[in-house]
Image (cartoon, rainbow, N blue to C red; front, side, top):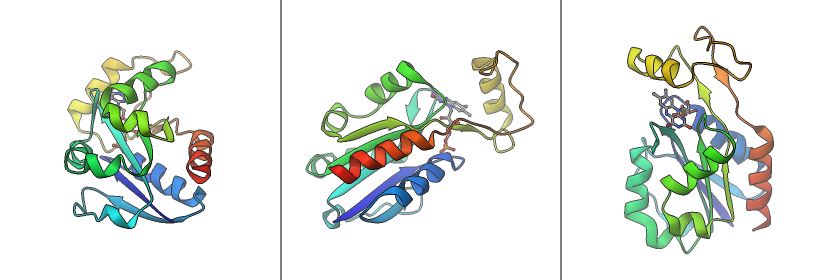
Length: 168
Ligand SMILES: Cc1cc2nc3c(=O)[nH]c(=O)nc-3n(C[C@H](O)[C@H](O)[C@H](O)COP(=O)(O)O)c2cc1C
């Protein structure tokens, strides 16, 4: 039984989550960053996990392309889908439902949002400006501090997701 984790990331948080997840899976796991590797032989895998970050309400374009090219084969697998994003609670759940193809979300044995990170040092001026505008206050109702990285990645949700995939 082999598991593939295929992911797309801009600044590395989705990759970080994919690696944390791979350590918690009981089967043999291969990781694939879609920016570096596009030709994937899905027939080698029983389980496929797809992860992406979200920017301005959209998933990464590499993941969209991957869906377009592989949807029919993907729905024959044991599937897991996850997102890295700064949305929380019901908003994050709705974001998953709205941005992934319905066939995949409905077939997935695990679907979860793992949280995300703001790496201000890696963002361009435009991105920093958007983040400041959209999230004027942090969780403690203080103005966002752009001098340090903000992370709310949930190891617990990653563990629960891994458990669901291991049981499938
Ligand atoms: C310009 C910008 C737009 C973003 N838009 C969204 C969004 O629409 N919804 C959301 O939940 N998170 C949003 N985020 C947060 C990212 O999804 C989060 O930073 C994520 O951890 C990035 O992961 P990556 O480094 O793997 O690309 C945005 C971040 C930036 C910088």
